Image 1: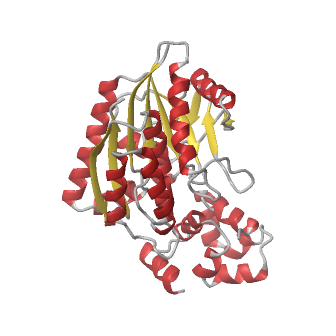
Image 2: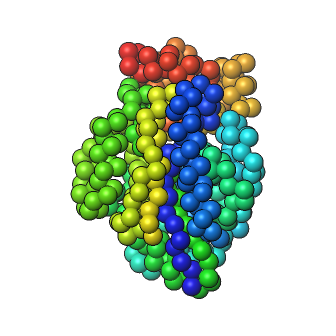
Length: 273
Length: 81
């Protein structure tokens, strides 16, 4: 049987790439160290497959069809389409079709209704953390898109339940795979709205603190606070998926720092699984 | 509220080739989309608040990035019109 061998989370803002040279040296050093530490922990977990949970930033889906959750079930996916991501060293990214399909099938049996994709473009949300973690060799990737971009969004509680579902699906996959999960996005930021550029450090720190407590308290807090703390903060859903996969326990902050140059409260975390 | 055609226009301009064509000849590219006259005018005058009410915030940001507006100017227009 497959087993969950690690859960991780990381921010992914585009300016981490586009404005990297303008990031002050001290912040750059801390971000690099945090990405490096996540990469080290991920390598130590020796995953055969990495389930990466991210929004789709209008790379695959348009208003015609905006799935709440979409699972990539292909043997290969496309690298990031954004021109400023051209330095990312993978134009094609190996998937794991059987595990993706097993997750989708398990979800349907358990009362979840994901869509599936047989070819996704893995945009910066998926690829910036993979790039900055400097993995020598990418594990196979099962991408899962969770909509946090275009309302209506899946509920926070449902995202946490998705994490529990993922753990169950991984544990019932018949092949002896080592599988890790990476949730990307957040923490606070604001894009294309009048508060654009704002970072809500107090909100971020309280969110981080509550990841160490009961999941219900965390979800209640986020339900109350997210509407007034930047639309990009909605991406914390992907952290909730990782949290759910870890059983709501074992959260460990690697680092958090607000980085005005990249207009994101940058967070990095892992879970003891 | 979502203006489908406006959103489609912004979505398509994520293509660097189309964005370059648009920068060279705005009217020719906009003519391919059945945009309402008031929307066309808002695009012409970079009326960020007007457009913000009609599309997704990320698409709005991508559009103004594609046409070369600096973030500082974009944020100023978001806040103050």
